[in-house]
Figure (spheres, one colour):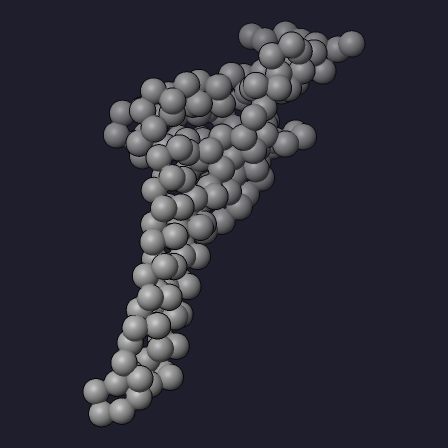
Length: 163
């Protein structure tokens, strides 16, 4: 067995814990609760609005309220489902608007300094990638998740001779 395969992410006795998905806690709960609240409020609003007439709301008004409610629920769902998942050969990062998979070798460093709302990956091409799956709002849990991600990157990029 080569040194590279021995040190791949997920190998060894504790590898399963290292390769678990990275998901925020607080943002997931808050976004989920807000989505349910907005959905219920939208349904109640549509049911309780006065009908057509001089002071009533027509079909266009109701459609607008429904579309706004659906848009807010969709946004909350996207926020609740941000994550980073270690996959074969890299990390799949699902943020609010995009999903991107980067190879382990592309990741130069993992940064999560004070004042950063989420982890940032510095990539070999000079670009950066936010990892919203690890958020500062989660406190010490987020710090532990950032260390776990840094460990995964270090293990995945280790060579037989690490200078």
